[in-house]
Image (cartoon, rainbow, N blue to C red; front, side):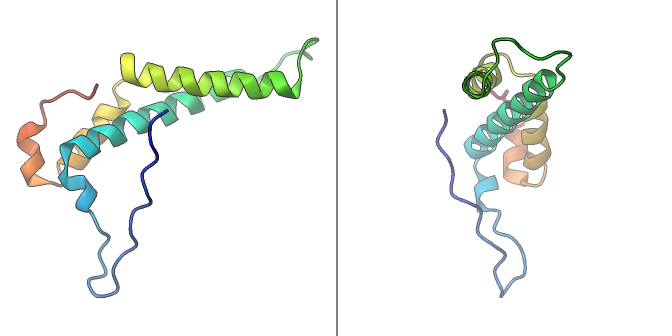
Length: 110
C-alpha cells in the first residue's frame, strides 16, 4: 500500500487562498492520480459485491473483512498495472491549472 500524505494545509488567513504547492510537482500529481484511481476502483468493487440475492451459507464477518482487504489490494494493483484512465484525467485536469506542468502533460500515469 502506498504511503499516506499529510493533509493539505488550510487556507491562510492572510491570502484567503488554499495552499496549492503540492500541485507544482508533476510526480505528486501522478501519485494523486494513481491513488484516486485505486479509491475509485475500490468503491466500484464494493458496490459490485453489495447486492446479495440469497443468504451466504458460509458467510461470516471475518470473510467479509478479508474480502474487503483483498479488494483493496486488488484495486491498488489494478490502478498501478492496468489503470482505467480516471487517474490520468484527474492529473491532466489539475495540470492545466499549473502552466509550468502543461508541457509535461503528454507523460502517462503509470
